[in-house]
Structure formats: C-alpha cells, structure tokens
Image 1 (cartoon, rainbow, N blue to C red):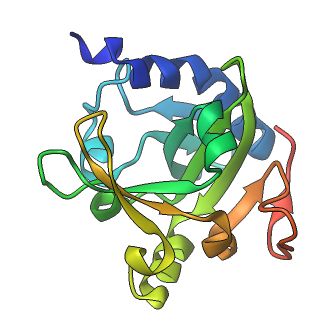
Image 2: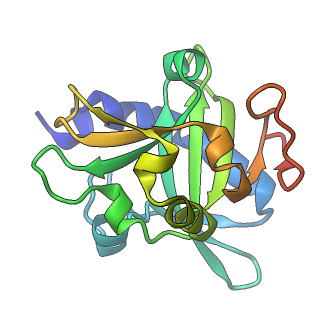
Length: 186
C-alpha cells in the first residue's frame, strides 16, 4: 500500500482546501506552501520539526504550522486535543519534534467537507503551559493507539490549554470563559 492510500492521508487531503480557506481568512493575501509531497513526509522541516506548511504573508514574513484533522466522531465523543507522544516503534513522537510556530487543529463536519470546529494554538505558549504544569501527564490522560502504528498519545481537555489558543471558531467547553481567545469564522 502506498503512503498516499492510507485513510488518514486521504482524509487530510480531503480537508486541506477547508484549512486553506481558514488560513486565508486569518491571513488575507497569504500563500500556503505544503511541505508534504502528496501527503508523504519528505521535507526536512516536516520530518524533523513537525512543520506541515509554511504560510507566506504579504509583508514577506512567514509562519510555520503543524496540522491535525480529526473526524466528526472524535468531536462528538471527545472534543479534546491529542498530542502524539511516542511513535509505534518506540521512537520519540510529535511532542519531541514540535518546532512549528502554530498548530491548526480541526474537527471535520459530518460530511468531511469543512471543519465543524477548529482551534489555532501558539506552540510556544502550549509548550510553556505543559512545562509549568509538570508535563503532559499532568494536563492529559495517556493512551495507546491500537491503530496507525500503535503510537502513544495524551488526550488533553481544551480548557487545560486555553491560554495557548489564539483563535478559534466556537465556544470552547460550555461554561468556560476565554477572555484571551479571539473568535473567527472560517
């Protein structure tokens, strides 16, 4: 089976246009460069630093971004942020290579045509929050994935990382007020 035939890669490719619309609404006039060739991790920035795309801004600046798209079922059942910890082969996972500036995390709608909900996280703030808490195990719960290579990950409630969320398109966790989070429609 080719890497591009994996269901997770096909899902990512299906939702990429929706992510591009959101990026262009946040950063008008930007150009987005995908560092994954047809979904395969080939670029050194992606492979070693978890940078999936570069957003080139009209001023000449750029922003690096990591992306994760989840299906609608995960939104309804969990509504959490998941952080890969170790790969299925026991090597350090995304958490140890996360060098992007921003993290786009979105949950698909029921038809996989757009994102029902999404957040944009400042990765530096996120890492600081995790360190100040004493580690991922202090803000989330540990899980072993039985699919996709048996990687381990932490499931983190959104309210635990709310200070790192810089923009989103929904009310985060009913009843919680987020005074530092701007809302945007994408």
